[in-house]
Image (tube, helix red, strand yellow):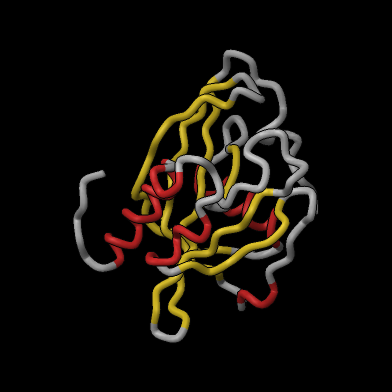
Length: 165
């Protein structure tokens, strides 16, 4: 895979970075679940943390095209991207940057059994129902971690609710 050099560890002191992530969902045995990979232990930024898949958008790149590129680079899969449903900002102390993340609904086009993990990026993944998210909350913030707040909103929207988070 041709991986871009612009990642969560490439220095970007004082810069603003845009990232896009995918709430990749599907029903398994009648239960809606979300695909959540776990970052590799060797990562400097958020090692061993489960997160929504995605990454940084290159300068001038369309955000949806960039999200699709990231999923292909990291998992060897293609996705159909739906609507954005959540956005937030954070400081990446490793990069020295301020990031804006936009989260989109998405589904895999291929059968998920074809997911390929690059051990430099992710050590494992799981499919989690909303009531199983606590099992993926690997940092000290638990379900208050902003990405898990996004996931809870994603599940609520899939149920037809319009929650305020």
